[in-house]
Length: 241
Image 1: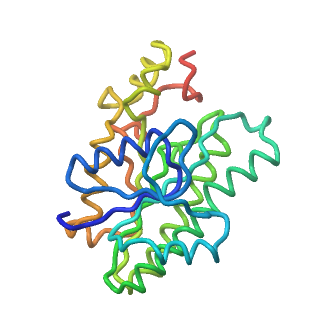
Image 2: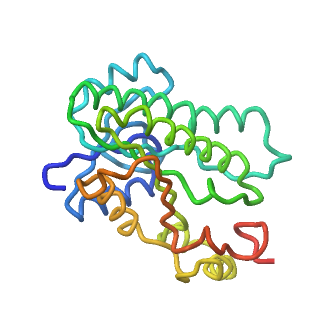
């Protein structure tokens, strides 16, 4: 990874910051682009993710990069019967449409630079497993998996790989803030018995972004301690009952 530059685009929140810090600690500094969430302080380049024409020009003006992480920014929970048109418009707009436009702009930049590169979508294990209360989130993240696999075929002749990382439960403040019975419920469904760390996710990103990962494209890789193999019993993520 010496000399490689990683760009993280999209949802700039505490998780994105943790991933960036873990990558930097492992020798792969990250540049951020997008719009940070309230309360998150990151050095970032603003991008207009809703406008594909403007976005193309903005991406063209960025410093060269070797790999880009695309992280959807809409992360809300709600039961199917309670979701309305506004929820779906936001979820589809931020998680699917914006990320599709962004992937196109990033791919065009990599092609123009002529050095190949890596596009890595960072979604969630929720895109691989249906759970109550995660309908809009899981559906829109799963749609990105299809885009990634199709784009992997189209972009391969340019030396660009496209993969998906689907992290499971991430250790940290948010997980630690859950009630103890809920944490026990979640851990019971993870074969390794614990959430994963940002450093563990960053290690997989470094592998995909390095020459060692140059033959991997169109893959969907869960980094979840086995959660998608044997999730906690029941249909709910949070309710141990």
